[in-house]
Image (cartoon, rainbow, N blue to C red; front, side, top):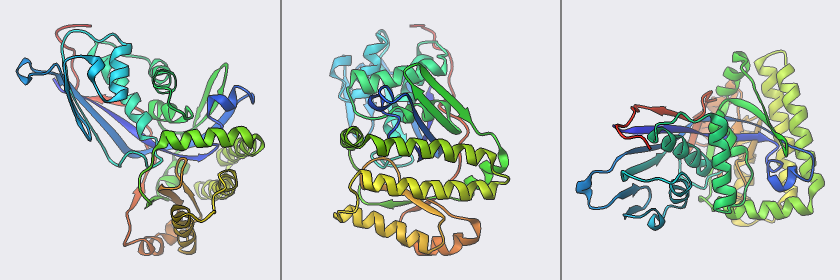
Length: 341
């Protein structure tokens, strides 16, 4: 039986950078505000037939065919299977995505979370979400030694319009379930592609060094996220909440530009600045680049009254309207295997 994990991508509104363990373990806590959206990573698996010639067959942008876990080239799949001590049947694994990797939407962590969820089910377990997110962080940050924060794993696991407060003592999650605010936000979010995909782990390493040398600015990002989240919750209407979030995003983006010395006018930086300027001139309330780096997707908040003009401005470019996705990683079309692991 084919089993598929479906795991959402995310957009981070505020606080990104304070979710790095290196930051919050030395500065009391980190705080981020964001949401999962209706873009997904799909990972499917079946027991590999003995007729296939190899124990493991893994299809992604490359094709892995081998008989030993240690020979699997995909680092996350190799690390997860090794960490659970996978034995017995081989696997045919295939992964697909709604957007390319390296575009600032947390796709690598969404894949890790979804694959861990899938492997637990294949082993006959229903893993608690806390176990899934803990394992995903351990695989990416400790086993593979990849730089980055930990908000992506939490967004992908739990889903929804949420804040996450990270500290050495654990993580506090607060999800906004106000349908009026969620619907207004869902009706206002757009992604516009700018530049080519980039190496997210390389960009994360650069951000880590920046955050160490400019700690006060990261603390300002954290404080802004806390204040904006509280004001968003207390807003009298969805429209008021959207205006509050837009103001916070614009202020946060300016801080991030200073932090990263953004604006030195490399080609990609000029492209991002130009796209954001065009979007605001076309009526957007706010615009910011998703994730670290200088390319990927720009997230815009656009009031419904300005959306026709906004979409005409970007009619020749890759543009996608997105919505809040309330669910985190989930499984579909699964059944228990005859053999338990």
